[in-house]
Image (cartoon, rainbow, N blue to C red; front, side, top):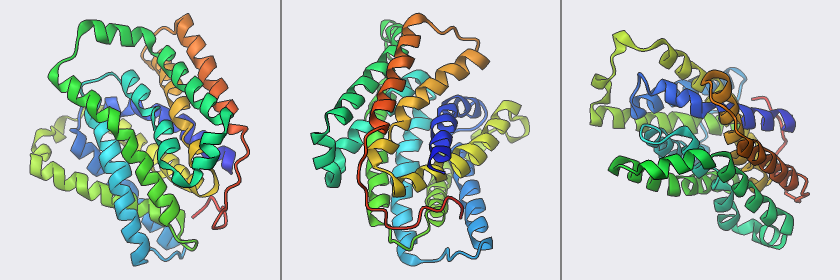
Length: 307
């Protein structure tokens, strides 16, 4: 089940960059976040309830509310907003820095992270690989210059991954041994979605969406983000945090850009250059190096993959 969960996080999340940009053709960032996370949160909580799980534990709900705010509203929201002004390739590069944030912020694992040459080397190699993967696009972006909105977006993408790491570690360490990961995930998404919804009304975004003339690709992209990006991939991510080291789980940030490049080649008719192939090989090598490290981690609960 660990392999399946990693596959979902690696592959599905790599595709979300592509589908978010498609969805933004018809929805504003706040409306997209509201519909996506409210829908996914309600569906997951209903499934958990149907399974007989207790979904109304106040302590668990409070933890989920804060972690959902950090993970899905702040970090995910910043990336959704930024992709209006920056290419998904640059967003993918900035997202890959989350592994560094995990190493620096996961105080309980400092002894392991900073004493392991393989971890530090793997992280460094992975970052180099991601930069090589998008090197040609980066050169084009910097040669053409940045507009004000693009600079703001770049600044948000610089600090966005830190909120993802903080939210992940908070959820990992504060959760009780009896808390079900899927119930927590459902509340995280629901609370984040409600914040997006409130924001969309404050900004007047609901009136900006042309509901009667939504592009078909925006609709199916939204459905994909709800079903695969949130219900499957994000739920798998939260579960993996319980059973694996946060540093190892964060290697998804290196693999996701690889998937994004392949999708661009398949559906966007983009060419894959030699330097990109080198970058892909380096990235996969770094993930293999980090994932082979044996880190002892006290699992506080049974690793059941179904709610």
